[in-house]
Length: 115
Image (cartoon, rainbow, N blue to C red; front, top):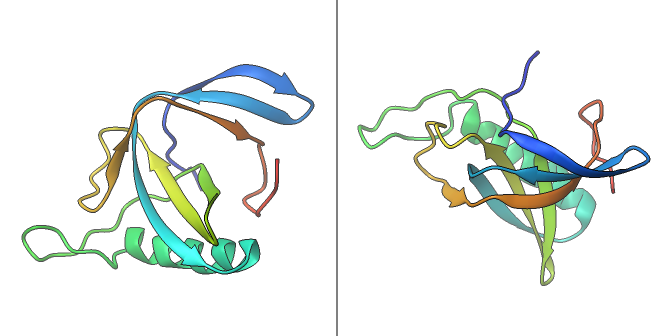
């Protein structure tokens, strides 16, 4: 299964960890209280539900959206922000823009990893 991903370039590589510079993109995100594991499981399910049709357009209809990569998690106080990133042409109505960002990344099998 192919996943959509915003365009990035690798600035540096440290073993299997890449320092990636992403071009402008849009995100769908959710804030999850609790542990990193809870955020990874609960946040991912919440966002997956959204892109698999649990959303509503301005006209009141729902739409399915392709799975995206990367999925990121970041600490915000006692909570975690879980975020799906997409190219700027993504059809998300409940999202926000992300200017070019730099993130650590690791190619993986789809499971959660720390880098």
